[in-house]
Length: 500
Image (cartoon, rainbow, N blue to C red):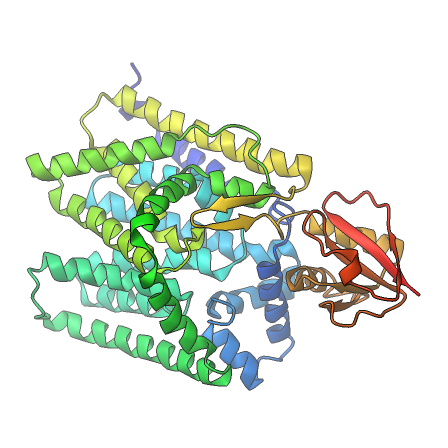
């Protein structure tokens, strides 16, 4: 039987490094550039060019509720754009870096709370989880910085010294400058520690300054949101109050069971494969979901009948439960990005189960390596190989309680190169997201002239571009114009010439 002690440290480090490399492979081409990514890239480029002083842009970038995100990672991108150029690789690179910092925090949390073995398992699982790999390659500030600030805030808050508490307050305070959903992170932490403290509101002196620092940052964030809401005719206020109230009014009787099945799909990667590749080429066995269910049973059983590691068990378990319940109750539509912290905590709970359960070392090693192999196989096949094969096909599917599609994750670079090769520069599209994509890809050459919408129906000598299967009917586009559909090698896009 294999012994855990026979695994040298350099082999584990090499394995973690190899898994980390997955985040860099084909980073600039798989998946295709999404419209949200392109918009963030355009904003970064504009800031780099010195356009960040305009009041409206300042409110949008700092308020974050128009674009669902704050400006923090944008400032990280500016030097990368300067040295590496404004391209897809440099756009996504900061997200990869933040995800690797998150892996470090997971290791430190589990190592210092449990043991080295649990920390190593935690890092390996985080690095191979489908949702973690795929979202660490998607240039939306919300996703990876959310985990970085949440894990860093929890890690430093658990440390005893005063300066660590200050760091925790900074992490959680800066985190609220992310997507609105981050507000559930300090709320979940606060609720747990309040309950575990016997519902006492008394605060030790060493906690007063960190709490005040966090509240100052939170107040600043809320004030900027209100400014943005006033500037945009109440949009920021609407998102802050109406959307949360709307989520609370949703039928929880149906929403809770839907959220459980949706969460299982997220944990095993089904939703992410469908969204980024438009396909599920190889049936996914729910290994992660099964292990997670076993982990919950194990921790609950140990919490009831054993005192070993009980404080840490209780902390991770209840923070997961509290955060998950808050998300399900207050979010109107279930979406993957809202569950990122819950997904991370679920991976931590699996790591606790595999790292601390009393089982022969050989069996533990086999289970961990089977999980690594299965996840890496699905990522390699359903993500990398499938996208290379179909360029990100178009698919509409049910995600949680609403219909989602794979638009924007198709091979937009192929489209842009075709337009350049054919000399097609005068374009119209009804899809604003597609316009953002083409504008970012054309951000240096600036050869395309792109209009959006279908309001001006009488046009000539202009090309209309849309997604296949999801495009607009031609009789709605150009009244009084002749329409010629181009025969192109593009898999996912239609191009029509509108002439007199």
